[in-house]
Length: 511
Image (cartoon, rainbow, N blue to C red; front, side, top):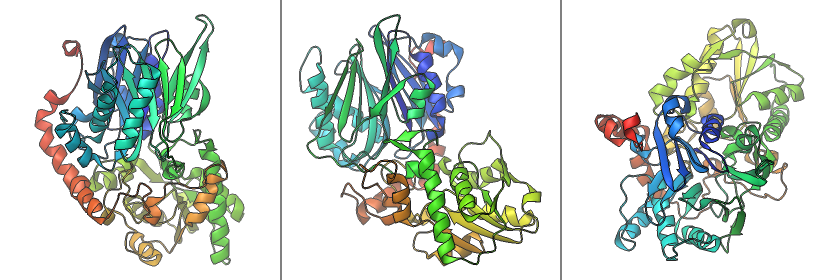
């Protein structure tokens, strides 16, 4: 899960990209980067850390240029080394820079072909670098001194033919323009829009992961990028679009609506906020059906992403809704923190219970989902320590039993608390008096109601059905050996000594 942005304008875009990345910070807190193109000269700054920490005034002064791309990173494939901060760059052809969100599922095969057939060297273990080199090779096959839109679209077609998995990307062609494209299943999100510059008489364009990024910068939403589609904005501000595949399938990731996306975003023409309201309604209906004689006194959300669902659930049940936890705003999203021990520690730092809302009451805690069980187990104990009589737990999403391979860090089943367990076993493991999960069909209905044209979603974490058709037990075992918390901890620990040599920063003398 990452956030990305590309902007083509008549004025300097560095500050605009910086501001946009702060809006997308929730999608990745591990690293950030910006690359701009100023009359053919590239300017780059990237490093590990939050946006506000990576970029200083001295960096922004030299991030000049009329087009550029930006990225906030949460590592899923590859380690969290500063060397893997994006954008990535290759100098041939033209000079290409890429920002990528998602995971490729056939990275190993592509990397081998890139080396043996395309004669390209891959320097990291990032699938983003693989994706960039595939695009570069396909674009180079046109052998054009100046690429035309059809050349760019041909390159994207080549990417779709060779790459499988979930991916959304923006690529900057030095001196020519920016292209954004999305995988043939539309798993990872991508949207674009425009802003009319009255003084210059032309349009500026932005491509980003979420609509809220465009709205906050004064851009009007054009539409979501379709599955398999490429959107190319040349340096003159002209828009070119094309579907670059003969077979596409609209199956966006439903977990964007459950947790990842901001509630004020539109995802594939579906309001995330409205989808979460409907999740609460449907969960309430299920609760009434299976526990008509419940003795719930108060509904309390686990802040922040569950608030919308919890409020609507309480309204549906006719029960008081209360804010029982105060969130420390300076602690990031614990779900995307590397390592179980860090997540466990950060929960205590992030939340504090208001005892008055718990003392002597039967409390229904509502969370967006239960992944590793770290948060909900600790929060249930916090509620009991605050004096709750009984603590019930509701998940706005179904049980997560399977790893995700398309850009969400759920790499191993043994890290998922519900894997191989019944609901009663999970209930006991987290210490709840009783537990209720959302039904998958209700979750799908809650999201799809916002856009009837989307009849299916990528739901592999719930049902184990991987829509790309290339994920089997052998693949998952290999993924486990590469991406578990234990492995990542070892990678990160071993790479610290070389950190200073891994940070990419053009004009490094200005650091």
